[in-house]
Image 1: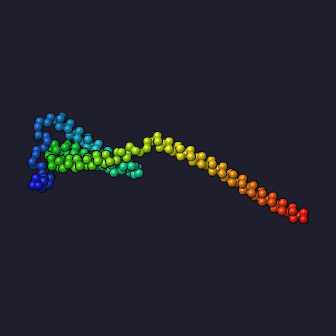
Image 2: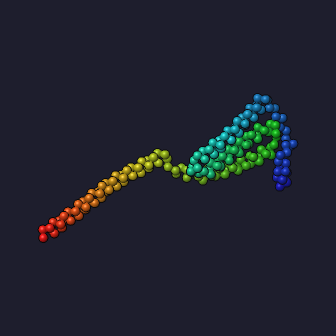
Image 3: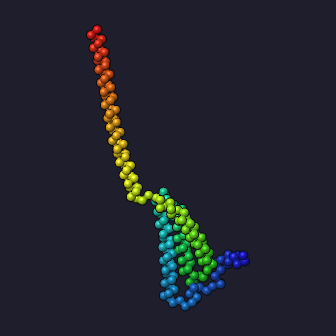
Length: 181
C-alpha cells in the first residue's frame, strides 16, 4: 500500500529517472525516428476518434453505438501512451506513462468484452443484398396491392353505377305502371 501512495504522491515528480536521451546510447537518428514515429502515431490516434465522432453525429442510429465510443476511448488512450513516450525523451514521467498504460489496458479489455458480446448480434444483421431483396419483395407486394385496390375501386364504382341505373329503371317502371292504371 505504501508503494501505491508513494506512486500517486509523486505522480508528477520526474527526479527518479533521467530523460530517455540519457538512457542508453541513442543516436540522433534513432531518437528522432522514435520520437517522430510516436508523434505521428499520436496524431493518427487522435484523428481517428474525431472521424468516428463525426460519423456518429451523421448516423446516430448506427447499431452498437457504445462499441464505437469504446473504440474512440481506446484509440485516444493508445495515442496518449505514444505522445507520453515521445515526451519522455525530455520529461521522464514514467509514472504518468504507467498510469496511462493502465487505463489503456482497462479500456482495451472493456472493448474486447463489448466486442465479444456484440459481434454475434452484428453477424445476425441482414446483409445489404438481403435488405435489397426484402425491399424489392415489399415494393412488389405494394404494387400488387395497389393494382388490386384499383380493380376493387373500379368494380365498386361500376356496382354503384349499376345500382343507380337499377333504381332509375325501377322508378321508370313504377312511373309507367302508375301512368297505365
